[in-house]
Amino acid sequence: MALWIGSLEQGLLFGIMAIGVYLTFRVLSFPDLTVDGSFALGGAVAASLVVAGVSGWAAAAVAALAGAGAGLITGLLHTKGKINGLLSGILTMIALYSVNLRVMGRANVSLLNEKTIKTELEAWAQAAGVDRHVVFGVMFFLLLFAVKLAVDWFLRTDLGTAVRATGDNPAMIRSFGVDTDGTILLGLILSNALVGLSGGLIAQYQGYADVQMGIGMIIVGLASVIIGEVLIGAQTIFRATLAAAAGAVAYRFVIAAALRLNVDPNDLKLLTALIVVVALVVPPILEKRRLQRRLDAEDADAVFGDDRRQAAADRAGAGAGPKAEGRVRPAEKGGEGG
Amino acid sequence: MTGGLWLERVSKTFHPGTSNARRALKDVTLSIAPGEFVILIGSNGAGKSTLMNAIAGRIPVDRGRIVLDGVDITRWPEHRRAALIGRVFQDPMMGTAPSLSIAENMALAYRRGRRRVLRSFIGAKERALYREALATLELGLEARLETKVGTLSGGERQALSLLMATFVEPKLLLLDEHTAALDPKRAELVLRLTEKIVREKRLTTLMITHNMAHALRMGDRLLMMHAGEIVLDLSAEEKAQMEIDDLLRAFERVRGETFVDDRLVFSQLEGKDHAP
Ligand SMILES: Nc1ncnc2c1ncn2[C@@H]1O[C@H](COP(=O)(O)OP(=O)(O)OP(=O)(O)O)[C@@H](O)[C@H]1O
Ligand SMILES: [Mg+2]
Image (cartoon, rainbow over all chains, first blue to last red; front, side, top):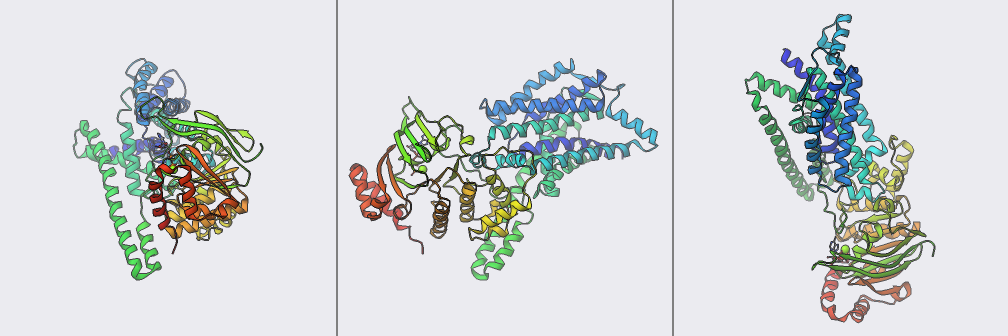
């Protein structure tokens, strides 16, 4: 039981990171590998501050700022330095490994006897006479949900819609006067701020920060986003962010189940990679079948007329992936500056 | 010179200094009056798209000056020029954001050239405005504001692109073979809309086409490009006297050497012109 409760609590905190990954991977269509570094950066910064006597919440806020800085650097490398996006993220990630060691002064920092968010909540639970896991669960859930709602709100503003359009069709949104360098930067900053925040919270929850704690985090984030999409769908913004958050919890449960089944902990990363591969490979195949059904329905059009066709198309349309249609990005023709 | 578009000796060479060097624009000088509707024709590789990309700021020019509505925009980045210039691309996929709804796409267009801020999007009044504008397309899109644009047909998307490009009146409208990817019926529809919007709003417009019949039928002025230069400039009156064959003969006079090839290209294009 403790395993499952722990998984839920962790999942809620990792959910913030997963929403961050959703912002880059899905919204901006930018595979941002900074995440491994910015997650550990958040943990390192928060742990160091807590040890220095800063309150857990303030430390988590600074962890978010540090993550934002990491995102800014990746963004500048990509937009101003014209470095390939994937490579920009890798460069920042590698650089952060050294930075994180410097921040902590060693490979890991223990928070065993420090005042953290966790100990604060525990004291609170004791005073109120409730089980501490109830307090953890409720608090972490509220926190994650607040982040989710804030991101939803942002994505629906003028600026947020410009960011979404940047991931969708950069040439188009530039032709309406948006500086896509700016929107890419903004997306990366926000995303990594959430990742840093998540790292800062996880460090306090598990009671230590470790320079290795970010390794493979991008894949965990991707797994969360994709599992969530399969479970919940991503037709609207509300659902898409909910999916990322819920996917993070589901992912923790999958890992817990694997541990229950005596999978060697060393094999967990392999398992995670496999989950992501399956989740990336299978949906397009299903999508292709769906399209085929739709084409068949259109052939029927000649016989049955428009109503039937519309009905068939609607049926085929339900349950489509987040950006199932029109994902083909036209190659930018004739531009040399792009 | 105030208003309209003014190009002064604009030059562009791709891959300069290499064996692939390609002079796509050679000292192009051109003046388009405010409200003038100009058609641009020319064979493949003549430099038509390059000219538009240079005006829109998608590619930097090597030399020359570009002045739009009295402002020198030669050094402006693309997104800044976009405040003044509306564009529709050849590929119907290019002009809209597929995973956003029709309403969201319209909202992006409605904010052309304005700062994007943290304000919540699209009130009821704005929606009514979009519906009204969409209704002019006569495609029923006004009833489908929440539909994702990626699910629209190519013709619907292109009509929407055109509406979006002109929703906030641009100082200049650039149309690069914007009907080339459509079947004849849809192409006719989008051309009719183009004619209507350009005339109603009196937009300064530059339109590229490979279709000789459209080139003669539409616009107030006809330009022909060849090898990076404007080689023919016909006024509306001159144009009105012309048949497709005259146009081909004019083309022959200007550059006899490759006429045979182009005649082939033209006649093929002509063949698929006429909508049923
Ligand atoms: N980004 C680029 N890099 C290198 N060369 C280019 C680039 N864009 C255009 N060119 C070259 O410049 C010349 C003019 O091309 P452009 O696209 O302007 O022709 P066009 O008149 O639009 O032709 P089409 O009718 O085929 O569209 C061509 O030789 C083309 O190969
Ligand atoms: Mg062209």
